[in-house]
Image (cartoon, rainbow, N blue to C red):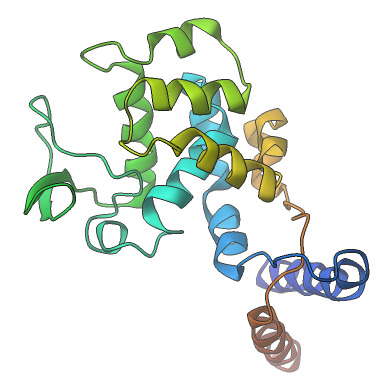
Amino acid sequence: MKKLFILILLFSLVSYSFSAPKMLRGVPVVPLKAVLYVQKYQVIAVEEMHRMGIPASIKIAQAMLESNYGESQLAQKASNHFGLKCKDDWTGASTEYTDDETNECFRAYYSAFESFHDHSNFLRYHYRAFYDELFDSKTKDYKVWAEGLQVGGYANNSNYAKSLIDIVERYDLQRLDHLSVAEAISYHHVFPLVIESDSLMLFQWLEADLQDSISQE
């Protein structure tokens, strides 16, 4: 299984290296952290889409934006990938973090997957029903969801919807919205742009690891 995973990644990186630069010279590259983030969380995003109706593309885009690809302090310290604050109805674990105000109360989780799950519940069962229209519409249109999240007041940023739409379209995340859970498990997302040069280091590491695996058999 490990060998198969390494071979798939090697093949992907080789494909990017030979095809993308010729077609997209001068176009901003895809951060390697974006590639790894999608690979890590695409299944839970698709699972939550089928459970609650939130497009997987929007789920991943929000998580990327709010957690800086999982590298934010909240994501690292509290597995909070969506910037959710405690609010009055929160009875779970919490952590203090300075955002709009000093030492605000934010939700804390045992894992990122718990964060993805709670984010769905937060939107669906919001005590002020800010997002009910989105769920009632049963739409998977990521643009409608992006606008609806901004109108509902998810973030103070007046460009929040545009930021989400830009992320979805930059990484072609809308493809995730057409997957079943079974398909998501084996799905290998193809990014539309060139992967950053750090991928060369990953390629070299994977190649060495594969050689190790082969030599031990």
